[in-house]
Structures are given as C-alpha cells and as structure tokens.
Image 1 (cartoon, helix red, strand yellow):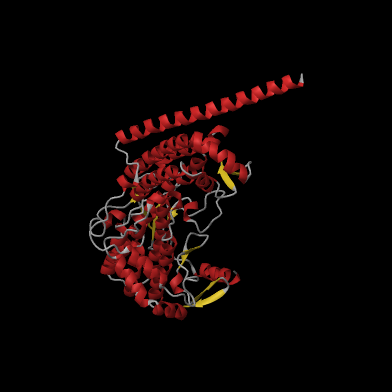
Image 2 (cartoon, helix red, strand yellow):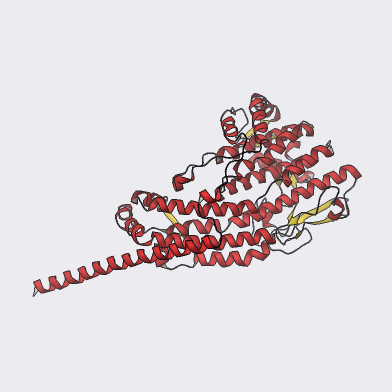
Length: 500
C-alpha cells in the first residue's frame, strides 16, 4: 500500500515537472515569436532600435570632451572649493530670493567662508579653468561611450561634469561680488553651455545631469541680473547661450538611447546567469506600486532558481514588454516636443504611469527590469518640460534687463521685446502659451509661468496645499521669477544659516 502511494506521488511530481518544463518552454517560444514580430513592426515604422542606428558619426574636428574631463581632474582643492561654494538665489518663504554675491561671507557646514579665500582658490586654478572654457567653445564634444557594455557601462564622466558647474558658478559669483560683471561673463557662458558636454550621450541619466547643471546656471544667471554695470553686448551673449540650449528634444533622444541600452543589456543577460543576478537584484528592495517590498527569496535561490527560470522563459517577453512601454513613452515625448504643453500631455503620462503600476504578481515575476526602470523614466518628460520652462523664463528675464538698460524702464508687455531683443516671446511649456508678465505698482514687474496646474493665478507665489518645500518654486501656484529679498528676509536668512 505504501509503495503504491509513493509511486503515485512520484508520478504526480513527475507530471508537475513535465508540465512546468512544457509551460516554461511554451513561454520562451511565445516570447521569442512576440519579440521578433514587434521588432519588425517598429522597424517598419522607421524606429531606430540600436545604438549603431541612433548614434551619428562624430563630426570632423577635434573632440574636446576628453580634454575637458582630463582638465577637471587637475582642479586643485582649496580652502573653500569645491565643497563650500557661495550661495545663490536662496528662495525665501515669500518667493523672493537672497542675492548671494552681496553677502559679506557665507556659512556652510558651520564653517564661515570668505570671498578672499574663494579668490585664492580660483587664482590657483586659473589656468585650468581657462583651458576648460576654451575647450567648451569647440564644436565637437563627444564622450565616445562604449554602449556595448550595457548595464556594466560606467558613466564616470557625469559626476565631474556637475562638479565643474560648481567651479564655474563660484567664479561668476566672485566677479559679481567684486562688481566686475564683465569678468563674470566668460565663466557664466561656459556654465550655461556646459550641458553640451553630455548631450551626445543620448541617455536619460545624462539628460538629468544636464538639467541639474542648467538649474545651477539659471540660479547664477538670476544672480547676475541683480548686478549693475552690464553692457548690452554682455547680456546678449548670455542670452544667446541660453537660446542655444535644448532639453525637450534632447530628452526624447535620451529615451531612444535608453531603449537601445535596454536591448543591449538584455542581450548580455541571455548569456550569463551571474549577470542576471547583478542586473535584477542590485539592491535589497524593489519598488512596486510606490511601496518597497522585501524580495521573498534569498540570494542562493535567486541565482539557482528564479534567475535561471526568468532567463530561460521570460527574458524575451520582458524585452517585448519594455520595448512596447518605451514606444508608448517615446510617442508621448514626441507629442510633448510638438505641443510644448505639459497640461496637454499630462493625461497621457498619467495613463502611462497607471499601466506601469497596475501589474499582477505574474507580471512582476516576468518584468522585473521594466518595473524598476519605467517608473523612473516616466518622470523624465516632466523634468525636461520644467527645464524648458525655466529656460524660457531666463531668456525673458535677460531680454527684460536689456530693455531696461536701453530705455531706463521695464516694458509694458513682453511683446515690446520683439523683435529688438527677442524673435518671439518664449513659450511657457506648462500651458503651451507665451510666458506671462505684468508691471507692478512699485515700478517692478512679475515674470512667471502658470506652473504645473496650468492655471494662471496672476503670478501667485503662495504654496500649494500639502506642499512644504518653500525653496522649490514648482510647489507654488505659479512659478515666478524671484524678486530680490527684503532686508528683514535677508536678516532672517543670515540667522538661519548661522544656526545651521
């Protein structure tokens, strides 16, 4: 009797093993067929799926990117730089901002810093910074990334590029503090153009760093516009540098690059279970549905069971799922580039995010890489459209300064800047309409974007309900180009930094 039960149990187990093997084999074949069919569909639409198709040949001429990155290594640490750079455009609860270059000293990490220390640091590195500025003017800047490495590719150039931004902004701030605006121009223009160093990477992570550098440049430009002694030629040069930047189209190219990067990575994973473990489980937590969940299997099981099953049965399905989601996101990006309106694409983004979040347990097993990456990529377009809006505001502010310099007053409207200072009024990428502006009773002006809610509140700087980050202008009803802080606000800022 016992033997019969054992035989029956063994038969059941064997049947389960056969069924599981057949099921996994079916899933593998199904995935291969589906992936091949979808790639043909994308190719028929003219989509470029590989870096060989996406990356154009490097133009003729000296490639200055290696020279810039090598020079950054030779910047010598000083008493202040690169850790405790001067403050710039410090936003107050009112929405106004403290002018950093007008401060006699600044406190960072409980250390009081002085401008003469900064001057000494910059003097030591004067030749290196001059070399960097000259290299950034060259037309060819290409980091020649080895995309064949897939997820193992090391992007060691990103951190130095952002670090360089802090040196350039500090040099600009020092010139402004010394009431020498003309001497600030070279460093400020180099800072504004610095994102060009990364644009040919064609990766979303590089685009995020470009946007971060642009935010530093915007704050530094705001500081510069608070100074006196400008010439129209200097301001025109700064304006031209900003007009030469692009973030929306570049982000779309970055998404195309990430799609190709995803395929390269998945091709690697087909040949190595160790690479699968490294790619899927590089951290102890995975974010699913906005909440961190502890992975329920232990590492030995990951390697010996789940990763082998995933690589055998579901890798092709995962790639198909990723390509489909990326195509959806790319279509939204192209629509955003055309519409220049965040409000118009917001429903599309919300639909996309909902689809990526609402997955069942089986999809979580099949699509772990997509689950990790798509949630992050969906925010990329928002960041790019914010950056374009900030760029439009900055260009308007420079043109307003030029108008005031020439006519001794602010214009009645932004249309008055056309065509003498602007070819057209820059677009507010939040609603797709021209940037907003009006004169104030005190003779000043309010320049603003309607913000992400798309509602024109007349330049209202009050915070949205449940928003608490007073220094994040996007958390206010309108994104307003800041006015200089009042004396009591400046004193409150000094007391606050002194305590910290």
